[in-house]
Image (cartoon, rainbow, N blue to C red; front, side, top):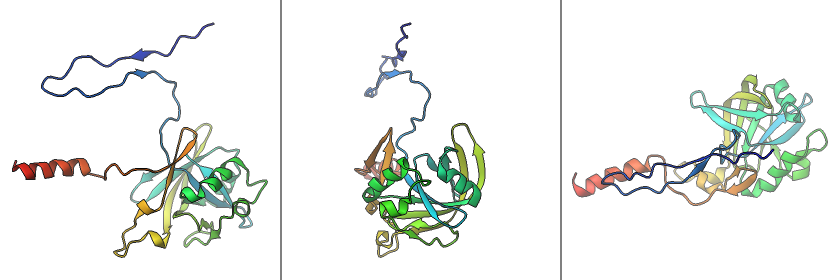
Length: 220
């Protein structure tokens, strides 16, 4: 049976009075799915009962709270890292730069049950400061995390965790002590592809600052 084409809808054609009309786009109804993009791509390290470290690539990760600082990651129960994290109650989230993207992709397509991913990728496990699970020395940013809750959502288990410590590459610190993440050459994941972060478009609050400057310049 022939399927109906996706439904489309169009915005109103009425133009706002006294304002330049903004460019609008037609939209098409799409099936519900994980289309929040782009998202960070991270290397999650875990350990087994003997302290042997493992790596897995995770794209379903995000900040969930500022105070206390908390993060979440979602893993399929069949992944090797799932049971390691459930048993140890801890993991590290390592944010790779573009230099580590080949290794990052590799860690997402092979299983730690079969290979030693640290050995295969040439990445280096380094000590954490608050937990037993190591960080990845080569990654610009590493978050040491201790789980607080585990929730089975469906295809994935959500691990909520508190960030107990952060390690950053010393070269990213300016002489004044500012963390210059723009030098980290970070990457993002979007719809099956990896992308290097590109041109800076602004900063938090820049839209308001522009209005303040304009008022000052015109005396209004």
